[in-house]
Image (cartoon, rainbow, N blue to C red; front, side, top):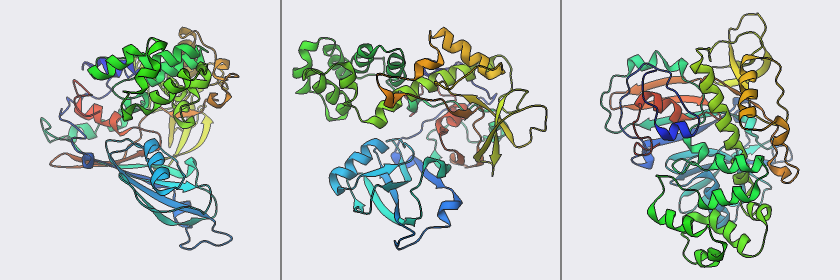
Length: 414
C-alpha cells in the first residue's frame, strides 16, 4: 500500500501496510484505562472449576488484575508484598488495565491487593492450567482525537491484516530485545551484554543515554550502580554481576529466565516479521492455503486447532502458518519455508544454531504461527471505542496501526 511505514516499524521487520484504509490518526493509551485487556480461558477449563478444593480439584485458579505494571513486574510485586509466587500464562503490557489467569505451585498462597494489582481466587481445577488453555484476548480500546469516526470501510479489510509481532515484543521504544537475542544465537555473549547495557536509539531519554554511555567502560560499573534508577532493574542485576567478576554468560543469567527467553523469542519474531513482509510484498496470499503450506484448522473463529500440510483439498476453515526459526526447522520446499531459509542464510545462521549448548535454557525448537491476524467480533462506537478478540500470541496494536496509520507510533501510544 502507498502509505509510509514508520522507521520504528521497519526496525522490527514490519515493512508494509496491507489495508487501503486511509487511517484515522489519534492516540492510544492516553490513560491506562483506555486500553483494557481480558484473557479468555477455554470453556473446557471454565466449565469444570470447583469453588472448594478437594483431592480431585487441587490446583488454585487465580485471577490477576493490574493497572500500570507489566506482567513480569506484577509477579515480583505480588511475591514481595503478598508472599505468593504465581505463574502467569501470557505477558500483558504495563500501559493498560488487564485481567489474566494465573496459578501457583502449591496451595500455600495469599490473595489480596498490592500497589498495582489485585489477586483473587476464581476456584480450583483438576490440573494446572497451561498456555494451551488460553483461547485469546478480548480488547476494549479508546482512540483519542481521531481525524474521523467512520471506519466502516476499514472493517471490510480486517481479514487482510497480517499477524505481525507488535513493537512490544521488541522492547517498544528502545527496540533492543531482538538485537540481544541475535547475538545470543550467534554465541556473541559479550556483545549481547554490551548491546543490552549500551544500545540507544532516538527514543531514549537523555538520562538513559548518559548512563548507557558510561556502561561502555567496565571501570564505571560500581559508580553507575549508585545512580541507576529503579526502572532499570535488569541493567542493575547485569552490572552487579559484572562488577562482581562474573563472565558474560553468568551476567546474562542474572536476568530472570522468563525475560532471558524473551531475547531469543524476540529474534524469532523479527525473522518472522521480515519473512511475512516478503510474502506480502511478493503478492502472495496470507489468508488462503496453497500447496505444501503448513496450515492450522481454525475452531470457533479464534482457536487454532490441528496443524497439517495442505495438498489440493478444500481449504475451508484453514489458515496458512509459518515455521518459526528454531533447531527443528527443515526446509522442504514450501513457499514460506523457502523464504525463511533464505532469511536465515542472510543472517549467516542455520537452524541448528538455535540449540545453545552454552545456555541450553534459551534453546528454541521453533513452533508455528498463523499468517493472518484472525480478528473476531470487531465492533466500534461513535467516539472510537473499538472492541474485538484475537488469538493468544497476537497483538492488538497490529490491528490499530492499520486503522490509525500513525506517522509516529511512539507519540501515538504504541
